Length: 413
Image (cartoon, rainbow, N blue to C red):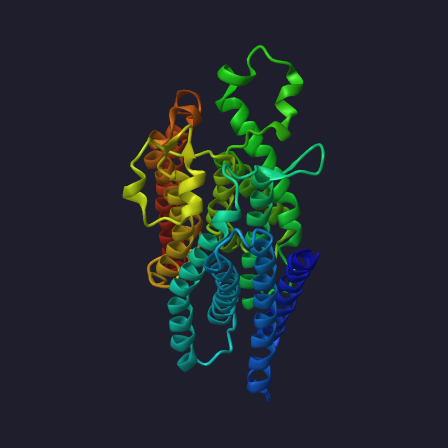
């Protein structure tokens, strides 16, 4: 009974602490730093909620591991609890630093390098803490991991949870950027309500068309709609979701230019795709050829165990692609968006997205286990088409921008 209290009470404490922490960050972003701000009080508030959520997760994981004591070595109990405490603490620290650096426009320039260094140097401790936490939990986990949360029938799959979480995170990042640029909070909310279901529909249609010969030909027409049985293609989801968002902006958001809106909303889709790939991890999908697990000893044990399929360790392509996608967003948003700001025109960032993701598909698709390659290398060829569209799009945008400037100079003279 005591362990159950620790597990569920700690989980509620962690969730409540995180919600309060996120709210405190949001409130701080709205504060005018030109006025009188009690920075010591603000710091104590943020660190207090961070400590509360960290304590909650630590207690919850302590309860999980104690359920297996005394059979479980105390070393694992401490690893899980302390690792969990530090994991959420460093995650929230990065979260606050990221928000402060990117969305607090009145932050004095002399403080920005400090915040950036704080963000960068918190990444490694977060990775180490997460690793320690998972190593402590491995003895109490049964592999392969369950594919979802069983609520009798149907089951809530982890794939669906990660897809939804990725979409919500995309909306949150986009909304933060819009607020930083002076738009009202929730400005992009209706865009999300249109783009997300369109993305799910597109992901299903893309999968059905790509797998028609092997899965749907000769089957009942209603099988097309049986989405709960699995079968979503992220490429189609990104395409249809982006198109729906673009159309909504054209007709209902006249106060923002289409190119600028696309530069904000399109690259961040890579974050959703990176998060969504972890749904494939739980489904034991998106893996490559058989490999010697000793060559991948640097991976956490839970990944190595879950990627052992039919008795063989498989190259974790889901993880590689997740990292590539999230890295792509950072490159587009910061390296290109800020580092090459003098050389780009509105719309360029949106066009880099299909180049990055298209080339990712071209490289990664042939490396998959043949079981998970869509008919006739559907995603491989479309990846090349996506990349080509992105390149042509950038060229067209720069030509149009050049012609516009030329016309303006003639008019002025």
